[in-house]
Length: 317
Image (spheres, helix red, strand yellow):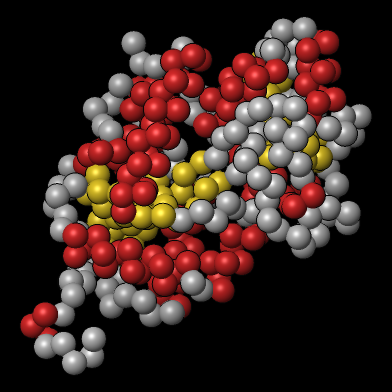
């Protein structure tokens, strides 16, 4: 490697790289982008600066269209969530994930069913039985945004349990957790990182996680529980699974060598202690993939979202 002639040095950025966040500041995508930026600086992983830019207009459409229109530009990358699928379907904006180059799945974000700790429900089954007994559209499910992940998951829950919620949208996961503590909604499907402070403080109760397996983290978060103690919703008799993509893409029309550069960079990021600590703190599913495997996963995830969106009547007319 070291003996290779300089003329054949692998591609690397020759000017600052714009890191697009198709969401507002402070949310999960923004946190992840800024953590990656910080790790790159701290460990000196890039010669050029990585500049985070938030483009949140139109439920993320602004950011995606920006990357779509930057065809062939290797100095732009974007962090994505599952709004990669839902935003075009819900808004009709002319965009598809295939308009970009998939680089790497960094992780999958979990969703947890939360209730107020003062309520009597000790399990997901107990809670859904109570929702059913109350009758349709009596209990409120709080979530982030409309026709996005939290509401789609709520529709999946209704389908699996024969319940019907009033869905109440808020601007962000932090606000959802506060509203649940205040008793303004009956439950939420927040990501772990969005409700961990209230869980630790004994204000919220985690009933189940919407993943195929329990979270692998054994360190106690509350006085009595670790993330690993939270059962899967399937264990609780609710056969609903949903995880959210945290991935990195580039514009279309870039070379394999340019994609390989970012793949190598992101592998180095995932190997740092800072990244590993962030994964554990946020109780992420640490699945990562790239290349053909990632392409196949994206195709299957898009299809699943299309089915859920159609069923919920969320597709743009």
